[in-house]
Amino acid sequence: MSKELIRLVNCTMAYDNETVLNSINLCVKDKEFLTLLGPSGCGKTTTLRIIGGFQKPTSGDVLFGGVRINDVPPHKRKINTVFQKYALFTHMNVFENVAFGLRIAKRPEKEIRERVSQALALVALKGFEKRSPSSLSGGQQQRVAIARAIVNRPQVLLLDEPLGALDLKLRKEMQHELKQIQQQVGITFIYVTHDQEEALTMSDTIVVMNQGNILQIGTPTEIYNEPKNAFVADFIGESNIIRGKMIRDKLVRFSNCDFECLDTGFAPNEDVDVVVRPEDVKIVEPSLGQLKGVVTSIIFKGVHYEMLVDTEDFQWMIHSTIPAPEGREIGMLLTPDDIHIMHIDKDNMPEGAEEAEE
Image 1 (cartoon, helix red, strand yellow):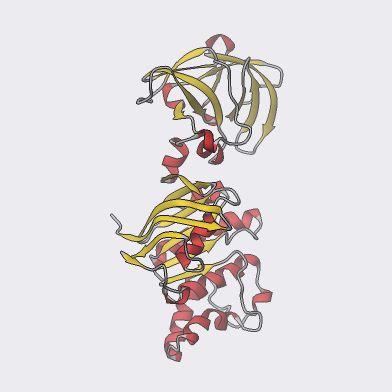
Image 2 (cartoon, one colour; image 1 turned 120 degrees about the vertical axis):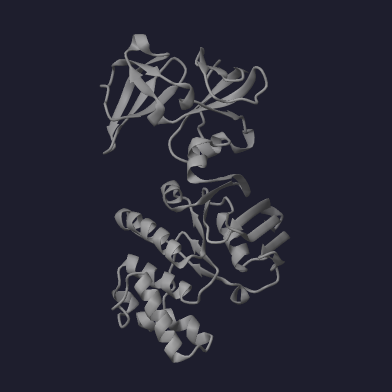
């Protein structure tokens, strides 16, 4: 198991009496790819800046290797940052951009050439040494920024939405390249994004944030399959979220039907949120379904069809490779493994969250 590298302890950040971070606690392990994920204004970039030393928390401690570093300036931390705007020096060629930090540190010329060459090879830019940054594509500029950061051999690399300026195809390519680079250099990456797919694709650990709070920490699989509240379920992929009542352990009622589930630990007859992913709803003949509804919309998404289905009390989203035409009545079948039950979190309800009458 990887050892702990960074720990935030009860870190709060406030500006003019407005709390941006609300006493968060976070552990980052050595060689981990950890992603801070959430909507704009949730506190993820502030968290990154506190780790990097660009901001000092109003209260709480930042520990690096068990040592408090609240008062250590950015340039003295074993941490480098890649920003969304790569901030490359336009008057310098690629080689000099990457070598900049080593020259500031007054490293020997032979060492500089060796380390710059290694860094450029790692990001697939060998042979680009004499090119101007302005002659490079967005993806190539990003690679230069990463090479400039890793050439200094930091223990941690902070990345603040570095793919935001790239087009969709290039962004997807760079997601895989970033993960490969992280594994090759063997250092800790802390990545900030509001893009759920990026987080799921690259991360070892995802930290979901909202309104200055950490709502859930887990692996991509845990976050997707076992969200802790309606906000996480709604923010990570598409979800059907419907209000229900937990009759007893492993039995929930919603849409006037009782469903077996796998969840336990709820109070008898407790009001709950029920989450069903669109891909987990099985379309069957109306007579075979636990629920019945009418298809009101169908959109082809490339690998599946997205259908909206109206029942008496809820509009369901269903993903299926076999479409049902608009206007047709269908049955919907759910197995216990398709249903996930959550305690109601009124402080972090997603906008437009649906509620159903019991």
